[in-house]
Length: 256
Image (cartoon, rainbow, N blue to C red; front, side):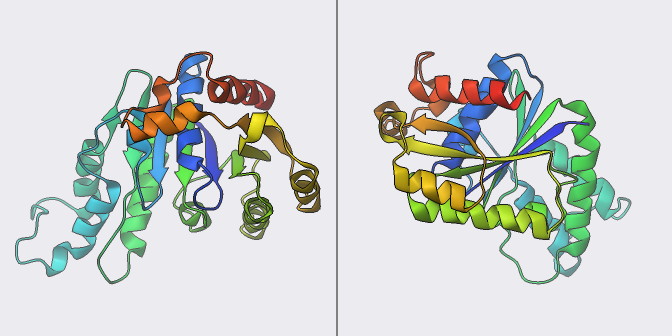
């Protein structure tokens, strides 16, 4: 069963960029194969990784949930919803050399998705034994984990910028994990975009107040901004990029 890593934090702190770089770092360190899951409704992990995505799980979930009310039911009469979803699920799996990518996507329709979410959970459970690691880029609320769609979580990486608000949001998410009885083996904080890779006293005090374990600090790097503006995959950053170096050190520290 894969080691599941969940990445979370408030909006705008760079979760997706760090998720993509963490995935690539795992691959570069030989910790493959990796299953990457984009669980953010505003999906763009594929852009960070430089992978084309044709279909999301949200598309399938929407189609299956609304199939019975559709004039042209896409599910063949001889096929169950579960079997149809399993076939379509494979079409959502974007494959690369060392990792595969699944994009959850957003659902737009009304009604109950409990049955379809259950099918989604079943499919993820089937996939997990095929990978060493599964990394999930979450929305701030960690909805997919708190609703039990993901089978388990072993490591939670909270991401914040240098602001007190960012650290406080990370603290609230840490509390949510306890309320939901997720029981990860490891939970810690990465502070992103730190000027010169250093934290001031106020940020350090807030981290201590929130009871968070600091895994590491990722320095601000203008190249990340430049790559984004140019539409380049962030994983293309050079080997000596301060972001890449910092994240690989964090992975070593986590002993993944």
